[in-house]
Length: 360
Image (tube, helix red, strand yellow):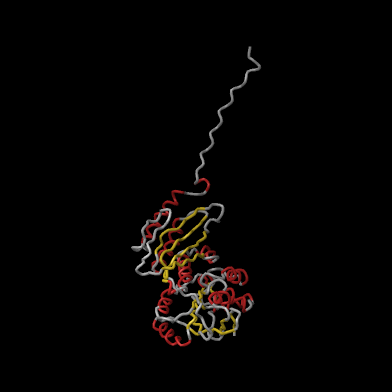
């Protein structure tokens, strides 16, 4: 007779499928392949001061104390911002690396520093090796052009955080200057002249507004040819952020030539020039001194944007301002002419006491 109280033997539980990091969206093998390509690109920027290989926990760089007997390290970190959205739409990834490096180089060069080394950070949802290699190649080439070494960085896979085909890009630069050669603007005086150097378009600032005006208000596509710009909308927005390092070096090689410099980035002339003004001084800008390029005029027209808003958002065609003593202006202009560098006098420093920019 069967025993009614007997317990049935439980079935063996099915083994769960083994789940890997790749199943969660992070492909370590693909990441390793990307890192090998990055190493090759980074090595092209190395010099004798670089003491480490790509892949260590930190990059090693030996400062040349013969060149910098009174060294002061100067650092800056920045990103490319929503200009990347245009890059995604156009599939253009080779210029954003140069945008990033040149922006950071300018930020320290205006303080008299020479770039030493650079670190990049690229984060994406799904790793596309060809895209990563293209971006890093742009970074590597810009580092070489600016004489700095790409000694490390981070490539992060963050599935679920970034949409497929998108990434974020940021960088940190370290430079050096001898203490007596630091340029802070503290020596700026009333009567000094403002010398403006042209930008190459929007550079890397104001893209949220520019994209809204071009793509939402005007309803252009990135490939739409705009007569007012004599270019396609996307191409006009993708012009590379230029480096001013070489021309800055030429100006600062002359004693007492430059009292201050401002890199005109986010905040435009309105917010960047006051960063170097001593107390008690204003900068008066002569709006008749130059004509903003067609891109800026078209953007203003599309959105009926107030003039002050334009100058607080965009560089308006001026990417760098050097503050020059009046007696040095003739010599400064000669230096710039020899370098085939376009420039114009856009204003002066006056005594008013508010540390503001005044537009006339």
